[in-house]
Length: 256
Ligand code: SF4
Image (cartoon, rainbow, N blue to C red; front, side, top):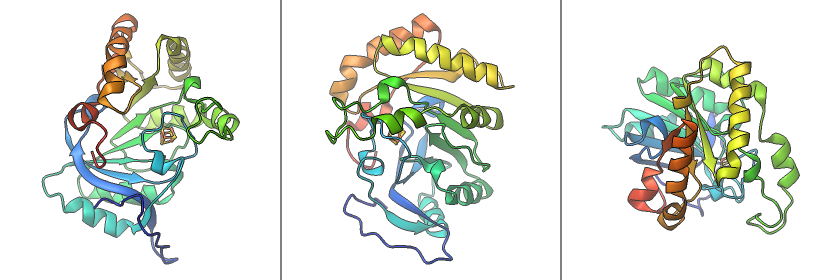
C-alpha cells in the first residue's frame, strides 16, 4: 500500500486512532543489526528535525501523507503473510502519540517491532529494538546545505537534535542500537563524546558493537564514494559498520 507523494489527505474522524502515513511497503531491512531480514515498513509523516541529507524528504521537508487508522495499518501489515518483522519509521514516528497504540497492537499480534527514531522523543510502547539515530552537528541544514535554499531551519534543528533525557530513557528502557550517519572523519569526535554521555547517563551497557556507523548517501553513486571510508573508521574506532543494503540492492527506488 504505497501512499504516494500526491496522496489525498483524509482527516480522520475524531474517534479514530489514526496516523499520517507516507508509505507502507514490504522490503528487506537494509540497516543495522537486523540488516537482511524481510520486513514491513510503516513510514509516518512529519519530523521535528530537518537534516539536510534526509532520505525521506516527503516526511520532513515537504511532508505528504494519508491518514490511516491503527486498524487499517495493522490490516495492511497482516496482508504480508510471510512477514514477522515490522519497522515503524518516518519522519520521526515518536512525535505521534498514536504510534504507541500501533506498536502495542503489533506486539500483541506477535510481530518483532523496530522503531527508527532520531532519539529526541521517548514513549512507553512495545518496542523490541529502538534503532536510535542521534543527529550530529553535521546534519544541520546550514544555508549552504538547506535543500530549500532558505536556511530557516538551521537554528531550530540544532537546538532540538539532541535530547539527552529522551535518548538515555530509550537506551535504558529498550534493546537498542545507536546508528550514526557519518559524513566524514570530522564526525568522529562528536560521536565519541555522545557515546560517552550516553554511557554516563544510563545503567545499560552500551557496547562498541551497539554503536553503528553508516555512510551518508541515498544512491549507489553516493555510497561508492563514502562506504569504504566509513568502514575504515569503524575498524579504527572499534564500532560496527552498517551497510545500506536497500540502496545496494535497489538504489533509490521508492518503496524499498
Ligand atoms: S531526523 Fe530523520 S526523518 Fe527527520 S529530517 Fe533527519 S533524517 Fe529526516
